[in-house]
Every structure is written in structure tokens, then in C-alpha cells.
Length: 192
Image 1: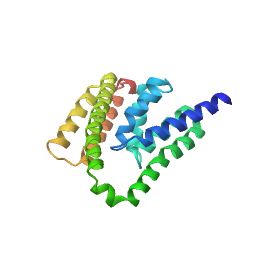
Image 2: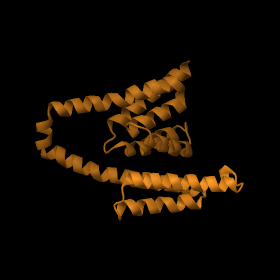
Image 3: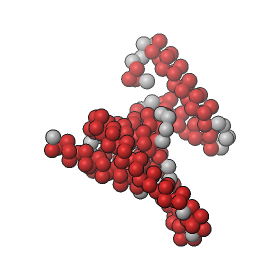
């Protein structure tokens, strides 16, 4: 019981901290969860985190909240879900409440605008770090199809402005039919 209480308090603290200092979107949460849950505490593996990030991204809602809830469930079950849900929602609600109350003052303040521009550079660095980590996990899978799909999807979206939904649907269909034909040939699913 005491061990669980200690874990619950840690979950509350770390999610309040992550949620309070995560600016720039949900993808910034992934490196922070990696630091605290994977590297510091070894509560989940890096592969599990990447799987959770993929599930959180493909589920409706904010990736930050979805990923925190998945990590909380993995670490502490249903109480972990409740604790992470509450602790990752409270800071943005308070911060947005304050910003909306004094929006005009914030939008005209040159110091706040300068701080926001500085944060943009950090967010870009964190997202690049996340992309590199995710691609490393794809390389570990040792699948030629996945190694080809990731760069092709990037090129299609970034250079040819093909709609992201079309890229996602095409990637799903290619993966589905590749798996289907391999299974028909008798290749095990793990060899895909």
C-alpha cells in the first residue's frame, strides 16, 4: 500500500510537471515521458513508449493526454489512469484561464512574445529528436516495407503536398495487402 501511494504521488507530481512545462503540442510530451518513465524510473521500455505514442496519436483527442493516460495505465492500472488524467488536464486549464483573462495584455507584451519565439526553437528540436527515436524503432523492426514507407510518406507530404489523410490511408492499405500476401505465402506475422 505504501509503495502504491509513493507511485501514485510520483505519477501526480511528474504529470503535473510535464503538463505545466509542455509547450508546442503533444509531440513534445513524448521526449518528456521518455525521460521520466523510461530513463529515470525504468517503468516502461522505449519500445513500449513508441507503441503507446503510435496508439495515442491515432486515437481521438490530444496526444499528450492520450499518451499520459496510457503510461499511467501501464504503470499503475486504473488508479494510474485517473491520476494521470486529472494531473495532465489541470495545468493547461489554469494556464489557459489566465491567458484568456488577460489576453490583450499578453498579446501586446514584447517580452512574452520573445519568450514564445524562443520556445518555438526548443519545440522544433524536441520534435526532431522524437522523429529520430521513432525512426530508430522502425529500423529495429528490420522491415524493408517500413523503412521505405517512412521516407516516402515524408517526401509525399513535405515536397508534393499530398494530403496527410491520403498518405496515411495509402500506407495502411500497402501494409495491409503486404501482410495479407505474405501470410498467404505462409510467412509468419512476426517476420513481416
